[in-house]
Length: 398
Ligand SMILES: [Zn+2]
Image (cartoon, rainbow, N blue to C red; front, side):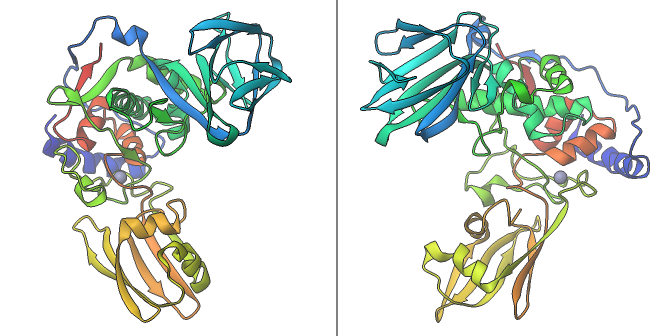
């Protein structure tokens, strides 16, 4: 569907949704048959993503229902078969692993359940697949889950969106998360030992215990589908709520990407994270900016606003000097969970500085709450993705 057409119909549908939140309506769509992406025929069956669960922790509690083989990854030989039970403590001493007081002569080990279907419980959460542990600096452990991409996605989607959302929004999220993952797996990573992290730096992944039937069905219904631009995986960024207009990636991270230029959303205005406010005392503000050597603040003003409504920069008068800071950098210093977006107004008062804002997240790519609004208005996952990533295609990855 052409983007303009979608936008026009969408606004009508959006008002319909506002007045009848609990109902959905059918919108006629053309047939959808994605093309195949060229690649090795069996690569998708083989692909494991490497997810860093814990980095540089002093100990881990690991359990498994059945026996687990332990491989030394330097020789690739099995060096132990352990019954870990509900919980066994793993620590490091002199760059070697210690399990229940027993030393394993290895710096990098892989835990593989004898039964493929057994999950490994790591610090209280169960994960599918295998677990690789590496001794890192100062006696710490890096724990990386090796898990098939489709299984990994089942542990991501319910942590990124609400499993109660309409299925087309869940499928759109699954395709975006799959595309993001595969693009990271292909990238020459700065981290040799893993592809993605388990938290908000990549995508929130909490394994088997977080899975929900509805999100598993959405992953399966969209299995192997990815979003592409000119035949390559897109950088499928997404965020919670765009505040009315998604961001041009150029203003956020500097790169110029044709399918990440920002669109008028309008499908997230009535959602939980559409508006917010944050009051910071002068001393809280100073402590947030302490690493920039700011000790006293005389004034704080917005300088420049982007066409999408987001702040461009702030002028901070402090300690007798004027400093101009990018709004995105300011947000990171204050904390992205507190200052939820760069789309805000500043209302200074004598006591507090009050930020009144819209949306949550960097604003680039797919707006999750907007995707929910589009799905409730009757749009399919492919239309949702092509709305937020204009010019992209949906293809079968193999
Ligand atoms: Zn939005």
